[in-house]
Image (cartoon, rainbow, N blue to C red; front, side, top):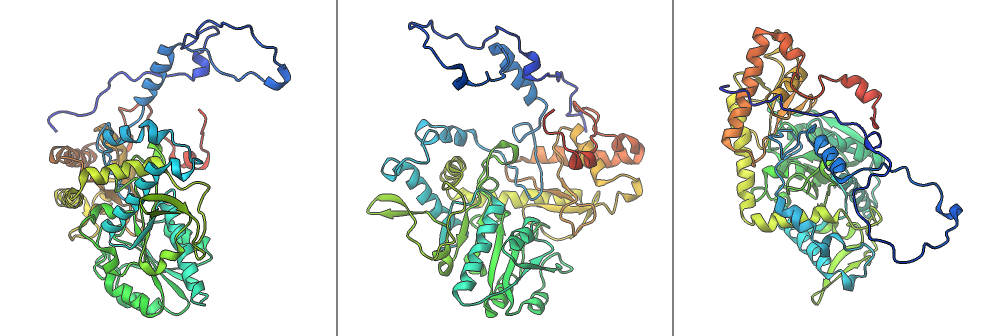
Length: 484
């Protein structure tokens, strides 16, 4: 690279607020009291809260310094495969903070919540149109919550048909939470291996599908970043035996305006609004995992449901076949506002967003496949997956490469997932990265491999330019310190 993009810029240590506090300091000026203090029973007050005395500048500098320790989408490229960490427009953050929306109390009656209810009603219709499904509930609070809702609805459907089934097919390229969601509903996951091309073989599905099997949980595009080309044939096989097709829609960013899930034979689909529809997730805020269904499953959707009646909107629980409530309130409303704003802002350009996401992933794949072993050398969708085959002889690991990439100013890609690829390096650039940024990222990865050939220890001991050096990840997982 012509210039090392990282920096050794000033990053200050920062004590806890309680260590910074000094008695008598205050970050605000209260008006003079114009009434006599009332007599208060000290027993009722209880212990005085342990709050530090801080000035305004103490507080501002504290959180500013902490923000400089972290890396986020606003800092640079965040190519986490399977996560769709794309840029979140600040306009949508502003809209979600409007007082009429942000201050709406969840217990307000429907007549005082018409704007919020209309937003949810319209968002459901938008998502149904985008996915090609018939009905939507926004209630699930995250992707795995949507999976659970889907499993509960499939269970309710089979029960309504007088059937008691115990197994469900889960391919090895499905998302990791899929088997857990199925097991929570009492189903035994039946693992099926993907074929030599990285996608499902209908013949394998036919061998395991029987009258004791609920259906299949398929991720499409799958976790290898590949489109399941035989999805319609597989769906037909499942339906012939009375089963249902659940699709994990976490990778919908590759299919907006391109794929019609209903025509593929999908019965149940969850979405991640905090991925595809550009709202913060992970440490950036709550998620949302709407569940989309075809018509024959609509009656099982969770309650309450948003109903429109002569231009008025209500939350109705008058659905006797519903699986019931998934949590106390309707859903993560702030996330819904941002997703609704994103859809209205993009309009028909949603299709273009998916096309660019696929283009960016294929560009990265083609530019790096001579440097990193490509697990499946074929056109990918929104992400590409490399293995460690080429760099084993260099005596470095996928983890070493990821850590060294931090020194170049990039967040590492997802590593060691999916499990079907040896020591995987999983890259999802999303559509929000320019070609210039992609080229810098590609060049950085090539440099890391070149460094490994010349000085393996430089890579094995990375990162070198961060506030803290390499952590003991085993100890962090087994003995986490959550307060320091």
